[in-house]
Every structure is written in C-alpha cells, then in structure tokens.
Image (tube, rainbow, N blue to C red; front, side):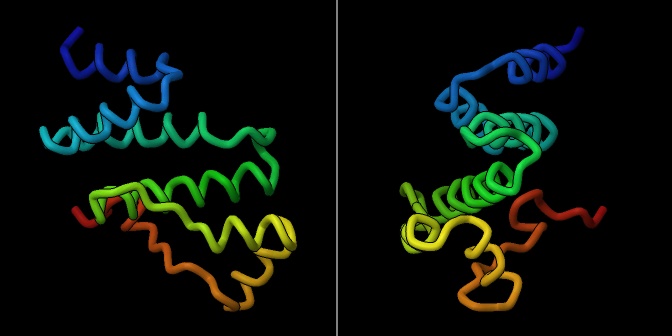
Length: 119
C-alpha cells in the first residue's frame, strides 16, 4: 500500500475537524489534490449536526464549505455572520428560497469549492 493510500484511509477514518483541516492545508501545500479533496469532503461530512439527507444538512455543508474556502483565501477565520443571523431569524428554508430568487445570494462557484475540473 503506497503512502497516499495510507493517508486517504486515515482521513476516511478521522473524525477530528482540526486534524482534517491540517490535512487539507498540508495536502494543498504538497500539491496532493486527491488527498486534499478527500480530506475536504470528509470535513464537510462531519460539520453539520443535522440529519444527513435533509435540507438543513445540505445547507450547512454549503455554508461550511464556503466559510472554509474564504478562510483559506483570506488567511484568517471567516464566517458568514449575516447568513447565520438570517437563518436565526427566518430559518434555513426561507434563506435558501431567497438565494434561489436572487435576494442576497452568496456567489459560490463549483470551481471554487471543488477546484477546476478542466483537464
């Protein structure tokens, strides 16, 4: 078993958010795209406390992904505070409806979250 396979297996079994964040950072620095992607997806699977498969779970995965990406880009912890406040006021479903209708929707491109798919 090669070193990357061992790391990927470790990441898949890991449940520590800080370790996964460190793996993402280190994999990115080393240019290990596959390991970075696996660690990022594993981190997102752990973050929401809501039941998987629900609108709320998917919503919070998206928010956490975007916050993680913004934090990496800016070099400091970034939270979507106004979005979180809006969810507190009107709920997840209404917030998503407003996004779908274009009212204060954050711009999140798939390339930003999952990297460029151009080969």
